[in-house]
Length: 447
Ligand code: FAD
Ligand code: FO1
Image (tube, rainbow, N blue to C red):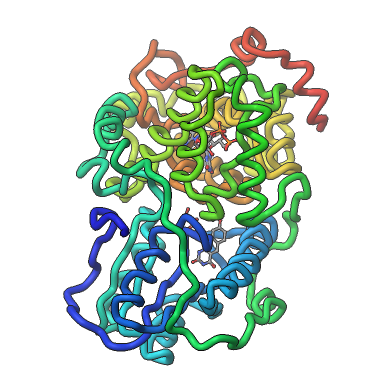
């Protein structure tokens, strides 16, 4: 049974007659998905058909071919898996405000379930759909281990304030999943999605191409998780800040598209006998840091602008607005990796060519943009633009939070004051040299 605290009712409608419809957005998977499980629970109770629909928008926050293909290939797998469970998957193209409403009417849905997301775009979609339908509409937090609203009812100051709240509840949420069942109230068969037609509706930049070191989809995500546990997890605590070591999980693209559930990852990692220090260190990132990002975006509508930074950070950045910048670069300079700093350029090349910059380099990369642009607003805007254009895991709460942390002191504290940065934590080339073999990293990503 889906824990009722995962479910949030979006309207007042009480009963609906007709198929149960799951509108999939953020949690693009057939297994380990509380939203789908809840939809099936209701459908079984009502002896009603169960359908799944995804709305493909022509342009989603400037996503490029790189991210859209990763997503679409994952969805193709979702369609096939759902078919085995006798659950039809539909794809509608256009804006959800119109297309989801139209689809709800077309199939005569009696109940609608959708995913939780803290992002403004998703919230606006849901609000619009809500106004146009008269059947019960529920949101299920299938993304977080502890549902965002349950973890905290306010914006948290940092990991140190959300951690105890999470730890208090983690054992009741970090459980295994029930299995989705073959749905008994659907007619077998039905039409398949025309994926080529779907692709033709996209109005996206094809200049940023796909990458081939990581495969999309639920099966590939499961394999990545098992590879990580078997071969990389042991060294995670010791090597996670070294961009030359292959120690990270590489699960963020899958998590971003919901092709794997964080709860599944945490459940599997928790039960291994790998080094405790590494398990704890990984779970701190996966649970505390990741769920803190959802908390930030959910309770702070300015998650992608200067106004969202904490008051102390805004104050110190304002006090240093007129400081002389030693270097100034344009978006194009940054995008083409044309700064004077070979380490920064290598990080940019890593992101542009692989679609995933190492986590440690992401902090350095964003902080240097604060140093080399005219205003913190410009630094944040350029960081979001490049992050979302090239990273496979871009346009995610963890991205907005990571950029706000690097440039705007979010979830951090004040440090020693210095030019341009004010009291925002500083990072420099020599600091990186002390931490890892910078020359080896430069060789991996030549300009
Ligand atoms: P692992 O180290 O294996 O971590 C496992 C999981 O823990 C990650 O997949 C992620 O879900 C979570 N996690 C790890 N580090 C963080 C963190 N600092 N904050 C929140 N969650 C974390 N993450 C994104 O998913 N999308 C982004 O667009 C993004 N942009 C970032 C931009 C900047 C400037 C910074 C500083 C961080 C950004 N992060 C982003 C957070 C983090 O760098 C990535 O999640 C991580 O590098 C992903 O690689 P991994 O899955 O191999 O990480
Ligand atoms: N969600 C949708 O419901 N429809 C889309 O067409 C869509 C496209 C898309 C493209 C790139 C990308 O990074 C995300 C995309 N998402 C889409 C949403 C995504 O699954 C996540 O919910 C959000 O990015 C929040 O993490």
